[in-house]
Picture 1: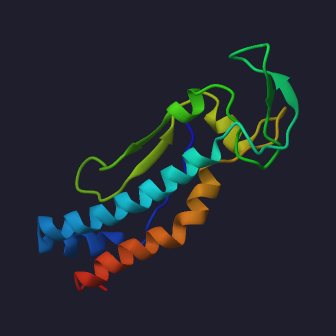
Picture 2: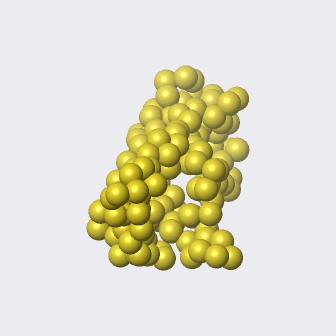
Length: 151
């Protein structure tokens, strides 16, 4: 699996205030976190495409009679099969009292694509989507917290 873990410093105090405000306040912040997660997941999904890549040509794994163009290093992966794209899942609520979301790539070769190997340069798809949407996600949560009077 491949993923990026983001830790927020000082969130314990904020979460205590949020819990004290009741379930409606927590639901608002959860909604903001979900919206941010969906933006990241959508970008991950759009980046895994069979066209617009600049790598080598190969015979497709699905149909050896068809030529397939791989991605070049530092490009998101090209899609030859649906395994990578179908393996992108999300968790909308973390267990316990935490407000959070996760996007998970379950294909067994996800980490190899994201970070590269000794034989292949990285074809990152999770990290770039996160970095591209990070400010948007922060703004969604900030607006939610501001509307609740927590910041």
